Length: 513
Image (cartoon, rainbow, N blue to C red; front, side):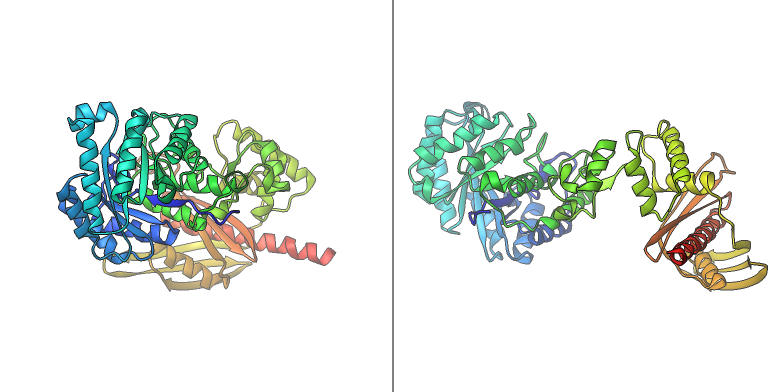
């Protein structure tokens, strides 16, 4: 990988927040900015200070609190905008004023209602004004993809002479296609005097679904800064997605011969944080950070992955902070994937049991889109092999309420012997589980607990599922009752019985070896 870097300019807090419904509080902006710092972005565009007191305060707070990245504030080519940005950015150790206008006939005529000459004059004045506050000045000309390139060259030449240090080339309405956008970047580098001494930046929107492709085409043709946002957040169809840009350069370093300063293992955390705070759900098939980005169901794919993950994964989920690949069990899953899941859940099956379980799995998979671990456990425990229950819950009493410490008492039969126990807990279920642990003398780790209604109405049955782990093996128990606390206790006892039976099988296997 080359030492030459592509700078990552994150605009989640400015352009990203302009997405309808994505408004963030000042503290939420700061929380995201701190995570962007941990992610290693080079520049954080914190806001558009002149647009509102909230935007000004959020920019000022990010400038004050977030160390490391350059903090940028947006400003039109208007003196009051530039002065507001400068004021908000004062606390930042490294600050940038990002001033912008438009260059396309559509924007200049209908939105700015100016002549091209007026646009050029105002742009030069704005850059010179910004230079009085900071040496780091970025200039953008909106809608370059629909602009006359002869005017673009003239405009960019003038702002470079005025002191701009970064030239941003926005495809504001997502109009360009990759080859075309790449040629625009190449043209600017070749034909704007002084372009070799400033940073050329991309800023692409996703109206045609090409924001990332256009940005990478720009990088390929000499751009060394990319403006992007976490999860592709932004106006209309959004911006280029930071995670896709970074992993595109990272994964295809053989092609780009470039790198970024991003700590890729922080990508997933940043994605989840932005999703949670904005309320924008990440689509399951979203590249890099979607729930299905590292999920596999097809039997051929699963078989290849289990032999060598590189067969169907061009990057590891761990490299972007995702806990691990996910093999989704469904009608397309082959034997290899199903048996591997059985082993990971702690089930050691004979050939006959394995075939019986797989056939039952297929019949259920035809009716359900996805088979969960609890379904696999039920297939094997309830239909393939039965477990003799050593521990029986005979009595359960729980007391809880507002201002009351939750307590539980249990009476259990253990191989003909009665055991009584009582305990307190954080809640009624926790208290019940503590009492069961005391009575049995066993304390497996509770890895997962869930409860759901299996029937409707006021007499609905609740089904509880408890997943426990002991010695690296997983055991899943289920319990059903109209009382959800009783169902929860039954599920825990069921899981313990399966654990004891499983440990017995393990002991026999070790003895036979």
